[in-house]
Image 1 (cartoon, rainbow, N blue to C red):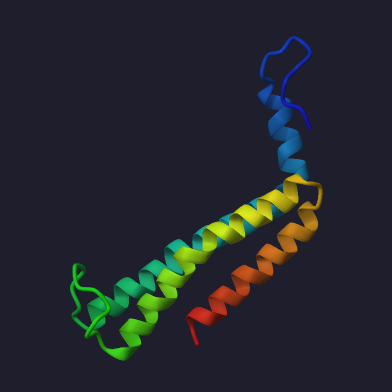
Image 2: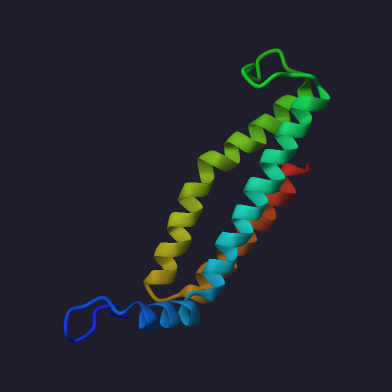
Length: 117
């Protein structure tokens, strides 16, 4: 898919329409990941810190065990998400957007379940 018109100018209308038609599934997975990571993981860690009265500058050392687990899950998610998103979008851009979105959705669902175990 080329976003350059014959005259060499950027054609955003064609790009936007074709992009949405082709990559709607990986885009939906990315939005789902943003919701899961931003709203579930971050809010759960913040609520856990508030519940255990463990201020923000303090790290995980010496924290109660449930809070340490929540912080570890959150950091693990932050460390691994860039690899998943890059791999998913690379696979989608190489011609397999459905497969990429399926794998990405499975990863997001399993990460969500891992956070609550």
